[in-house]
Image (tube, rainbow, N blue to C red; front, side, top):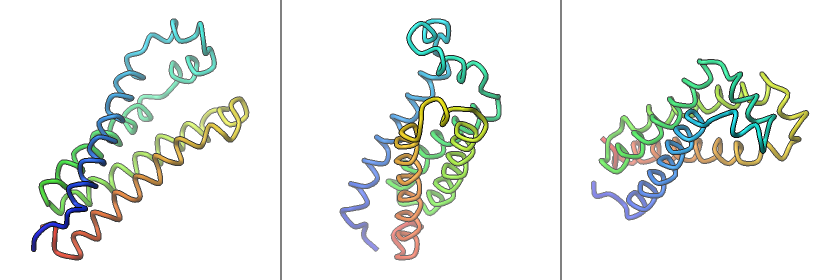
Length: 139
């Protein structure tokens, strides 16, 4: 079956989105928390105290999202599994941020807006890839 035009458009958009996630991970993981503390001491403290498993979940979420997007563009059904792993890792990452810290008390519910967008886009990527498998586009 030939791939719908939407596959290329969605695949490229998803790849660019996930590459931004990769860049965000690298920037946050390698940032100088002492320097960040000068402008945002609370966030610097949260990053400094973030457990290894949460950093690992963050890394897994962005890497598997990127690989899922590449496989989507290559029309491979394995994209579905990678997007699912990414989604689970997103839940773990933000679960820690919101339930393992006092972030909501300090920053308020507006701190959930961008993470909610990330979660919704993670679901959308998974559902889109799964639909393409069902249609026989991904193999």
